[in-house]
Structures are given as C-alpha cells and as structure tokens.
Length: 341
Image 1 (tube, helix red, strand yellow):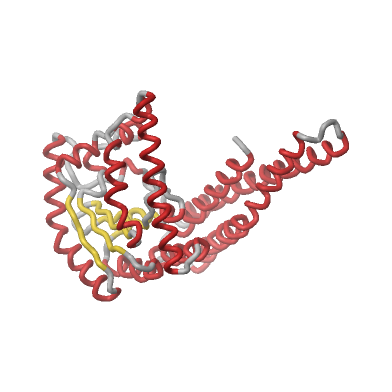
Image 2: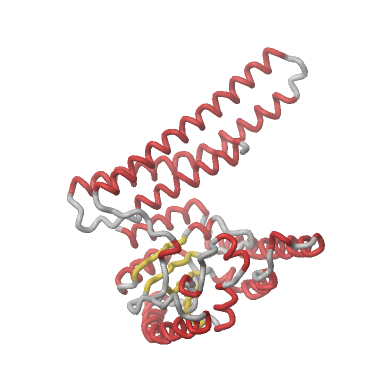
C-alpha cells in the first residue's frame, strides 16, 4: 500500500473511532463514566482535526522525497538525506497507527465498562418480517408495514416543511424493485445473507435542501419524533461513492419496527439525479466483476459521466452558498451531537 493510501486509511479509521465514541448514548451513565467517554470523544476529534490539516503536507513531502531520490544520479550524500527523511515519515506513520490501535482498544474497554454493546451487525438489523416466508410473501409483508407508516411519515414531513420552508416527499419502492435489490449480484456477493428483511428503503422519504445549515435542526426533529436512528450516514456528503451521489441519510426504525430511509440531498444534485440515476440503473443488476471488455468500457464511461455531473452540481451548490467543505464537516459534527448526545 502506498504511503498516501496508508495515511488516508489511518485517517478513515480515526474518523470511524470518533463516530463510534459519539454514538454512545450517555443517558444513565455516572458522572465518571460520562467523563471518560467524553475524553475519548475529545481526543479522537482533536486528532482527526489536526491530522486532516497536516496530512496533505506530510504526503506531499513524502512524495517529493521519493521523486527526488529517483534523480539523485549517484549523489550518495543527498540520497542518504532523502532516505532518512522517507524512513522518518514512514516510522511516524507506523507510530500513529500503533497509537490508534491502543486508542481503539481503550475505547472498546471503556464502552464495555459502561455497558455499551458492540455495534449490531448489518445482518442482525432487519424488518419485522418472518424470514421463512417466500420472497413474494416477504415483499407483501414489507409493503404492509410501509402503508402503516405513511401517515406517520407524512406528519413528520409536513412539520419539517412548515418550519424550514423545505420540500419533502415520500415514495414506495415497487415490488419488483424490492425483489431485484434482494437478489442484486453486487449486494449478494458482499452480503450473501442479504434478503428482503434487510431492505431499508422499501419506504423512503426525502427533504430537498437549499442550505445544508438546517441539518442540525432536522436531526433534532428526528430525535424528538421518537424514530430510532439505526444509522446516520454523513460520509457520503463529502466522500461520495463511485457514481458521485452526495447525501446525508438516516436509516430509521419506525414505531412498527420497519426500517425506513430518510435522505437529504441539496437542490443542485436533486436536479441532475434522474439522468445520473438512469446510468446507475442501467448497471445495478449486472455482475460488474464479469463484464466483457466492451461493456466494461461502456460502464466506465457512464461512471465518469455520472460522477462529473454530480461534481459539477456540488460545485454549483458550494459557489451559491459560499460554504466550504471544512465548514460542512463541522456542521456534520453538529448533526452527530444532535442525534447522539
């Protein structure tokens, strides 16, 4: 693994630890227990913030030293200095990684001491559906749950739109789409246990945002609603997947037990979503690892087209609002605080 990839993996793991510490419910803990968890939250956050700003320069220094080493042309003294610089940077990274493991172990030990369970695996997070039913019967059961939740979600959306001046709507995933997703090759390859009971967007709703600064208020409204937050996904806003789609999303467990998706795109991305989603839909049920060369080329072109469109829309949003990704990262931390504190 390259130095840069190694460093970015380290930063991602540090961010995961921060999220893990933030997601611990503090209610019911003693003062001493809260203080210990808060200490881990503070440490991981300050480390994350500091390294986010220093990492680019360290990576650049390392890459420059490696490039210079290739053109020293027999200058042994200069080569020695560069080799020492490279070795020092690599040693520092290994030290950071070792310390991260120590922090991770200490955090898990602290969580165990206060009775916080390890995160539930995705396999265990399911809709209240009999797993022995046929796939068609499972789809019917999921749709019945969705219909029960329609008035609950509708009331929540009306409240949000009235307070924030936003536009929200909901939709039911079609039965054939539910079955397709439960059997999608790319999903089943990674999660062979995946089935209809694991689907979280059989019923989904969204609020289109003109300004992401309202996100903490929406997080507070979710918490006040009594919906259980099964998963909060903020990572896709600043680090989108390969198609380029950026959102903040909540996987919620409704009062009747159903898993429902609530996602919040910005207006600029929402405007180009249909054309980009058509490209995604074209390939979503294909076995991407076994495409022939012609299809592989076509797939890569569609992937690039989608990513470029979404990136252009994202740039337009940033220009319109004057917001920076650094500011948005801090805003996303406020969302975490609103949900988990």
